[in-house]
Length: 299
Length: 126
Image 1 (tube, rainbow over the protein chains, first blue to last red):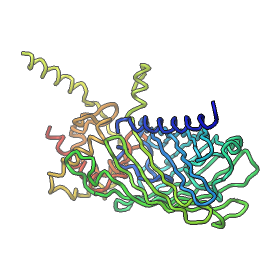
Image 2: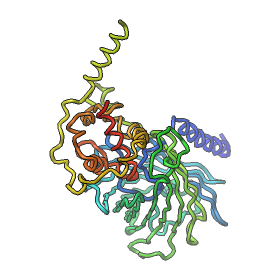
Image 3: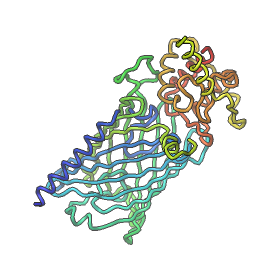
């Protein structure tokens, strides 16, 4: 099989996977914020499983290449204060190849029981990735996207740990969220890398109408994100780091599925000029109970 | 005859499905200030229809279609629930009781949470 044919076939597989996932009956939780990068303080509901497919498309400027980086997410509410997530990700670059770029396992803990003015969440993630990863789920360090070929990048494996302090608040129906990120590549002798994400959003309607409707304002949630790298222990700050400003919108299509969209605009020379992000999520309610019942356990 | 049997079985099923043994978590209490809050939508009962839609979307998985309570969740028709003030129910929806399976719905706009309270009041009349 020629490399060209293999490349075309991989693109087709990527697109087919996307199409199949989009075919699942569709809306997400009513209270889900529309962010792609920023986390708020709302955990997954206990026992629910959210399956989502997200994509980041990098629109290049001179010397850069168009890329398409899809990733799937499996988010499970272990308890009312603990959410665990598994991510599987890949990437295809124009004029290059499509590669699997690794997996991530993340956990979020809500230390406080009740709602407060500011609600902290503690976040820990382990990443088994290679250097070809381009989903930009978070931006840390200088966050420059490498122009090297996928074959070379995919050969370099990285084991990384990441921690975030998530602070989030609901004020008059607005959600305000800020994340401070620290990441350490265990495979290389690098220092710690830092990043941030800030988000503000609100539903387009305060009241729910009595009728069933897909296009009512209450089904839409809109906002804006600002995220970027803050350098590393070798040089903390904004110098030569990537930053993005991104309007975000989500549409709850049905009771348990939603569609998200965001164009992110690069603010510095090392940023990609535009990142288009879109995603679809479907929530399986009481997934844990359903699985328990299948094996004869108590739901 | 068939309809009578059907009604009898339905009533028995409903009774068996109800979580009448529900015990309140004694530690899950709204602060006095929160409990005293009035529902700003109390004079607009027509908005309960929106509350019903939100209830269907967010609550039926645990509380059942008519709030009868499933699993460990409360039977919302019971006097022990209905006797609580609007402010208390609003506070419980907002904060949840995460260690006992009730999530927080603070991400819903405030008025939508009050709409749910409005709808919960209609369950007592069922």
